[in-house]
Image (cartoon, rainbow, N blue to C red):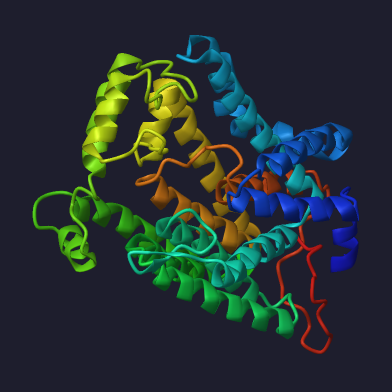
Length: 427
């Protein structure tokens, strides 16, 4: 069967204007700006309606992606036991909407179109960060709230631009533009003075290169390469505990090189506070929005004073697993880990089966966000683009299973025939 006929068996129900709304959604969930809720919530409501309207396409994907809804449903069911039930319920609903929108985008778009949309949205923010920026202690902040956010956000542009640049399905002019935006993203990462972002940008190169070499051709990849990749992952899994434990480890030397302390700028002290908080509400937690209430919680005021925060600032435990356990209890922690294992398993399976830059992109983003989850508290937070990309990528396995015909192997276009600049209808 020809590639075009195979693609025709997977129709995209989205209308052109809705693809434009998807781009707008990617923008509004990538950065925060004043009055963005006037765009965010109407778009979320419309997309929720579209999930129902296009249920013939979304229902099968949703049925196969049910683990994505576990934590949101638990957040809703446990909200009456939260410290602030209304806020906990609202958080759960937003998490549920976020998952449903991921299913919708998987139904509407192909993996390549998702990558291209992310590239466009993040690229716009990268370019704007050149012209509208401020400085803090000599570091650029771009259009974002602070320098660390600029570094973290540009990681997504860096990954998307590299994956577009090295994807042979796109025309050369688009790949060239992607290389320029990749250079812009790396420059902004350097100008943000964020050591974490710099290290993760190098990790992204390693992941994209490694995934491309060991599994980039999917089922066409030689078995010895896949075996070598699995062995490499096993060696790293064994070596990491040794590197992270004990005094005077390589990790200490690495932190010293970056000018960071082993406490990760006080994060380990925050985690000690989190462990005490979890013991107070171990099963159900405080509920969404139930803990960080400065005026009502003496411990929060103590933490703010210790870390020199003002009452109007937003703070967290700087670890997604501690944060989710505080708010959703140990049950929420189990569901968080379950969702991650489910997503990583699906992303890995799709890469091994189909190959191609889109699935390399999804898996690289998932790897970076898992690392960031150890030091930031955003994982599973609703309406965050980087995390939604993980779940969208995982949802594609359910979409592909609905196609009764075998999926075509991911092959670059014939060099004798011009490739479409936006050839995104492929899986």
